[in-house]
Image (cartoon, rainbow, N blue to C red; front, side, top):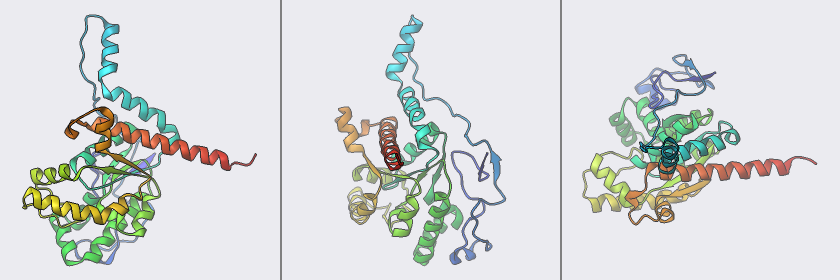
Length: 292
């Protein structure tokens, strides 16, 4: 059995903050650091209930032909098979997705969690929840930068102590050595999304990047310029990830002229392949280290 916070499987906010850093005293009662989760937790089955299949309808007068066609056009079948193939060697190791936050990265994280029967977390969302909401988190960052960064570190510390998680990590995860060390408790993958796609997403959704000061009310060129500067600051941290999945590279491999044609399933398959490669390498290294 696995202990998990009382929440839905697709969105797991901390109803009671897990952190004891000094800055949290302004909006939550002091608590002691725990190696286990709070008493508000529920004990549930170690595997989340399976969610709705991603199957694509395909009709044919012949049942055998229909099955063959579905297998050919339904990406969920290949994804499920790949996830099943790597699960045993993965052994519950958590997956940390780094890179600029955007809808592509979060959609990927949720689908990956479904396929692996893992739980999904967004570290920035947990920081916001602990602060009392996104607006409160942004205000905290502006008034107490040190305290805000401590909250990011505490979130990663607690998440890294667990297993069977897919975590969309905010930019704070790659900004200092302590946070990077927490990511080493799992497999980290850089989801490299073109900046113009990230900029369009910010403008369309008016979504604030919690760990940065991107002016969401600015023009496309202004947002893109700020993202470019942020990317240059972050890319060294992103590059420390165990693997990189580039949307541009996926599009090229699949023969797409437009990167918008790359689906969440396409990216997820590449992530699963990278996880498979990394677990295979680890298995080989462990075998080589055994005495004859």
